[in-house]
Image 1: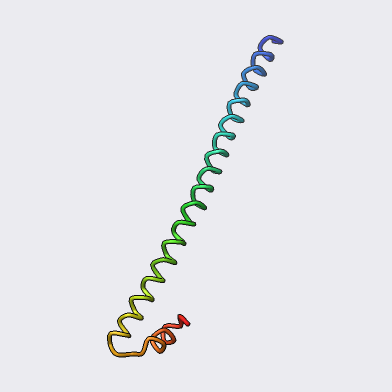
Image 2: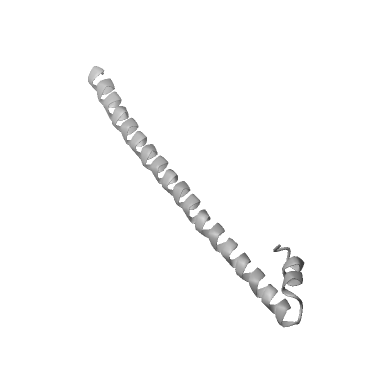
Length: 80
């Protein structure tokens, strides 16, 4: 009976070690996903800002081509 209990406790300690290792791996994986998401979010924000700036310049150019003064075109788009 004593040997059975020792064997059961030894098995349980091995399972506990494996569960702790699995949790550590999952924690590291979650941290990597969070870091990658922050990294990609920076690129997305920069791309959106660049796209917005290019769109505003294109709209200003269209207004100027239609005969609107450049200063008025810039004010109309709230650039100045």
